[in-house]
Length: 432
Image 1 (cartoon, rainbow, N blue to C red):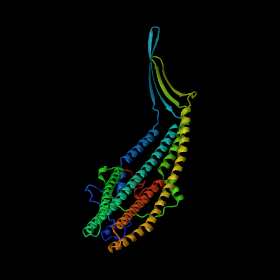
Image 2 (image 1 turned 180 degrees about the vertical axis):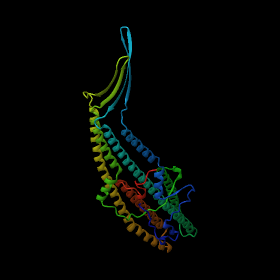
Image 3 (image 1 turned 30 degrees about the vertical axis):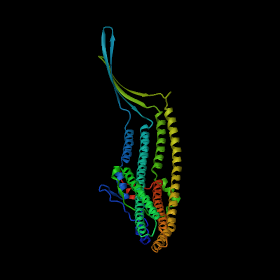
Image 4 (image 1 turned 90 degrees about the horizontal axis):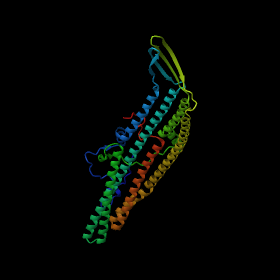
């Protein structure tokens, strides 16, 4: 699982007005008692147990399994016929009666071929279900990461708003002492207003992200679960491209489904060829001619494939087989492209995070310490404080976005290679 830890700035970077708040500890309002607190594992477990979409896909698998049951059953029932006939001659009348029992018999192995087709279709459905489960896990982790990001962005916005309010209060006190002008107070008041609006937007975005997480997990959107976890710096180096491509070819459920569908089409072609051969009809009969004879006999019949040799179904089956073969090849190329794109995105996100961590953020923290001393000594004014505060907030927001992008890139790479978010919730676990 891709863990998350947010590197927090040193408290010594705080301004004398209250810059100790730069530690960015979450200052979210108290959650409603009904809001559950979810780890990523808990979110995945909930989704696997309650997602109506996954349950629908599981029902589809049962439908395909029913086709295998039907394929194993012999398709032709015995036929029983009763006969009665009036025989008349000059001066007399008699009634003839008869009974016959016949059975159509397949002689080209059609039943075995039908079972083979149904087995391949069932295998394709099972692979599709595994892929659907991975897609659900991807959506859950994606929305979980989005919720964590929005929570961190809200924390930054609330911290910025608190600092802006402190700056406004300090400017008002300076105005009362005659140490500044009304312009500085107006500037601080405008800055505080913008910061408060940012908090409201961030709070709404966080609530929406939590609702989306609840929805994808199969619970009511109003539940709004609170995600537990922090954004982590992406220390782990991704595997080499060739290893990831091999992993994708081995694990991707849609590739497995495409292969089984292609095999099912090949089996269907063999079945169509066999269906062009005639079946035998064997039977036995008994007839009684009233007051005269009793007749026992057997029958053997076969249709003559002069006109219909199942040519249409054979041609259709060949075309389906070729189409599925080309679709399988196209999907393989698309999977390789997905892996390459996800790997490039992850590498780019890691590089951006490294730059912000080692260059931008470190420099800004040093500047904040200098700002604290300079402002306390009266060598700089409020305008410089506001300017640097905005730069620090912008960089912190950018760093959060980069960390979230790295997490989401890792999630996309897991999806591209067919890996579930957590091994204990993998394909080995039975679906509910």
